[in-house]
Image 1 (cartoon, rainbow, N blue to C red):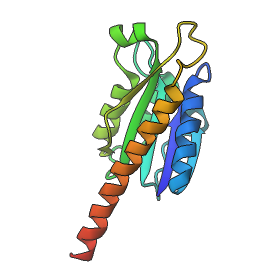
Image 2 (image 1 turned 180 degrees about the vertical axis):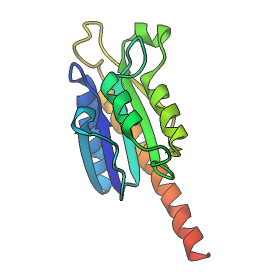
Image 3 (image 1 turned 135 degrees about the vertical axis):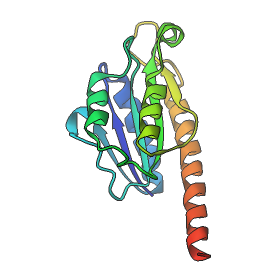
Image 4 (image 1 turned 90 degrees about the horizontal axis):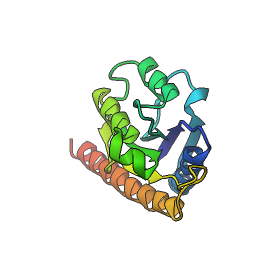
Length: 163
């Protein structure tokens, strides 16, 4: 399985999660992990799984991630399996839209196939680090995504065999 993890990060928390997710994915195939600021557009040629994550901001998506999605051609993600996550405080979870949900909506409009529910990871009270066990939750979530992606790929192989 070929995977691409793209993240936006301000304090390093989302980057830390993205790197953990990428390390789990690496056990199941090739994976690249990039900051959204390093990319002009999402190049998903040869990619089976795309995972995007960024912080939730009070006014929507992290600006660099929003620009990356705006620069990606319409319908270019047709058929790509995707999952999204964000980082946020418990307080922002109550009062603002989830960046993970906003990412999922944009990716769906671009033709992507959404896996798993979106995932919110939480920042501690000091907002300088992830809450305890968030990296463990990221590992569990990634295993769920891998299972879903492999089930989809298995169905595609079966349908091609009998076509």
